[in-house]
View (cartoon, rainbow, N blue to C red):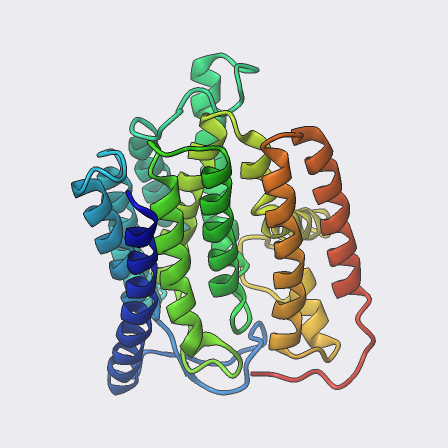
Length: 337
């Protein structure tokens, strides 16, 4: 696929996503699909929830078109089908909030097991360190965790939209540098980043609407498809470095809550970025710090194509520094959005 076509695709995704999100906002307001503030929220007024109704279809259509044009493997269509299924189930949960954990988790496991059979490089994600069957099993578990942590981390204005942009952009640049022209990672990464950028027009502080599970669950799944595809093609270090902030914040917070004997599966306000907001930093201020860290991670991911271990060590140091920065934000009056 030519560079100009990728540029046109990217611009089209940005504009279409921004327009579709604006229409979704009108519909969500009209039908009163609202996220009401509670003790776990980082906002103080009812806000429409369900921006994923716009973003996910745009990404799905782009990926279907890329597969149809031969710019992405046909297995991409399976990933799209699973993502759309996740979106439908998550939308029902967004509306009613009544789906039990076992049903949501069971659907995720089933969808990911199906997608694994079509994932480029499946069975080689751990670079031969595990037998193929064990590689499949551990990859599935990691993918399930990534989908859920991506959902858990969507707690303030602009954070998950920005993370999606940075990971999608990072995958695209790594694929360009590594000459991964046949994997489809270049246009797939660019299109998901562009759709998220269009959504950010409406989700930046003060957010006019939220992504909702209907957006965060499918996007986490599709980003997992891209990252695991990179790892399966041998670029394990960039695949680990690009989402490293989200991985670290979510995993360390989960372990902290488990040690404290809390219900780790329930909503809370204990992530590092949430603590920074509670200490008085604005949503935009927190997200801009995370974006700055992610820019560093993208650069290190590019370096990781050549020097994987050195890049990973530097990335770990960068993320530790970012977490400490968020945790040690001086206490002021905590704003809500």
